Length: 356
Image 1 (cartoon, rainbow, N blue to C red):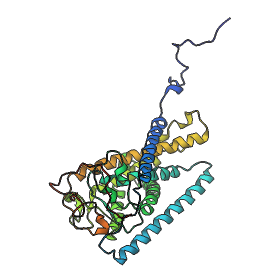
Image 2 (image 1 turned 120 degrees about the vertical axis):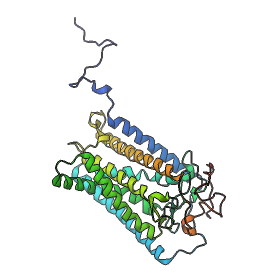
Image 3 (image 1 turned 45 degrees about the vertical axis):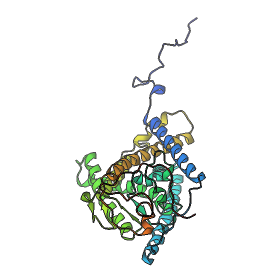
Image 4 (image 1 turned 90 degrees about the vertical axis):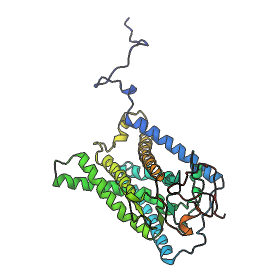
C-alpha cells in the first residue's frame, strides 16, 4: 500500500512563485505588529498619566488673555470638533456604501492614534508652547518612557483642537495629493513618482506655512525655540521654523503616495498580503488598521527625531506671556529656557506647577 505521509525534512508544497505561502512574511505581518506595539505603548502612557492623578487643567497664569485670542480659541476648537464629527459621518456613510471600512477611515484612525506623540517635540527641551486658554487637562509628557524635559508636564495639550485635526488633516492631505498627482500626469505624462512626491512636498510645505501662520498670529501656539538661520521672523513671538514646513510636506506626501499607489483591491503597500492571512474578514480589517497605525506612528517617530535634533541648536527664545509659557521654563521654575550655552537638563521626574 502506498503511503502519502510527508517526512519531517520534506518542505511544504510551494506555490506558483516557488515559495511556500505559509512560510512567507508579508508587509501586513510586520506593519501590523509595529502598529500593535505602538498601541500598547500609548495605552501604557495614557494609563500611567490618568491613574497618576496628573490630569488637570493648566491655568493661564498672571498675564490676561486678550479677548481676540479668546475668540480665536473658541472658533478654532469648535471648527475642529465639527470637522471631526463631519469626518466620522462621512467615513461611516462611505464605508457602508463600499461594504467595508473605507481606506480613508484607516488613515483617520491611524493618525488619531498618533496623538500621543504630539508633545514629543518638547522631549529634551521646551521649544513648543500651547495657549493654556484652550481647553486642556495638561499633558502626559513625563509618562513617556525616557522623558527628559522636567517641566513639560505643564504643556496644556488642547485635545479638542489637535486630536480631531490629526484625524481629518491627513485624510484631506491624501485626497488632495491624489488630485494633484492626477493633474500632474495630465499636464506632464512623463512625470515620475519622485517628481510627484517632490511636488507634494513643495505644495504641502507652502500650505503648512500658510495654515500655521493663522495659529501663530492668533497666539494659539508658538514655536518658542527655533534655529534662527532656518526660520521665518526669528526673534518674534510668531517665529516659524522652515524645517517644520519641510517635515509637514514630507509627511503629507508620504500619505498621498501610499494612497495613490494602492492595488486593485484598494490595499496600500503596508497592507499587502492581508488576503493571504487565514483569518476572518473582521480580523483582516483589524490587521489593516494596525498596519496603517504602524506606518503613521513610524512617520511621527522619524519626524520627532528630526525635531529633537534641532532643539539642541536653538537660539534664545523671545519673551512669551504666561498663558503661552506656562512655567515650562524661566524664572518661575528651576529650568532655564533653552538657548545657546544653556545646558540640557536630564530630569525625568514629573514636575507640575499648575493648580489642581
